[in-house]
Length: 276
Image (cartoon, rainbow, N blue to C red; front, top):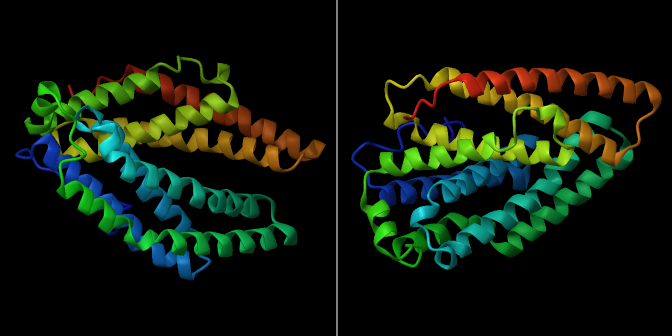
């Protein structure tokens, strides 16, 4: 099973937070490179999807382990991952619009974007991303200085994991109880923060063997799906002005997704944090 599908078994109780961070960052950088050939040599949209997921998970690692990371030291990895993510994201957006709307002009535009992306990735030496990440992690430049950061880094990963999950869940909770009140842009941001929370949960789940996390994660994933419907509809409306029939259909889907997401959000809020 590819890394994009699971990170189970990567972490163990005897790891320090620093060791866990290096393990996870190395893993997802390599997972990105492993999926590059599908993106670079085929038109299969799974190549775009899996490379983006690997980069999003890598960025979630950087988010969760911020207390031990020196901003300037980790910047080469962080900045390159961000640039790759957004560059590939342009192709991913075009693929989604083609699937939803179709049209010869969009097919041609998608082909042009794919050619341009591949050229840019070759120029950037995207194949070397994992090697560059690994080399940086072997040094000490990424380590935040100070006693507190040192204690976090050398302490058990479970301690920092609990803190990371508290922060990530708190970030999501800050959006408030009513999803319908959020603007489309805020809902999109909410979905991204929810993904970070989900990925961190999946990374750290093995550290809580008996935790009731399955139901919690299922709810989070279902929420992501409903918010994804809202994001896709907003993207389609930005790209093409819908006719009256299409707009009515989109309005119905939007209303249904909002109701479902709201129910799931309240369900999630009622569940006890499994990592405490």
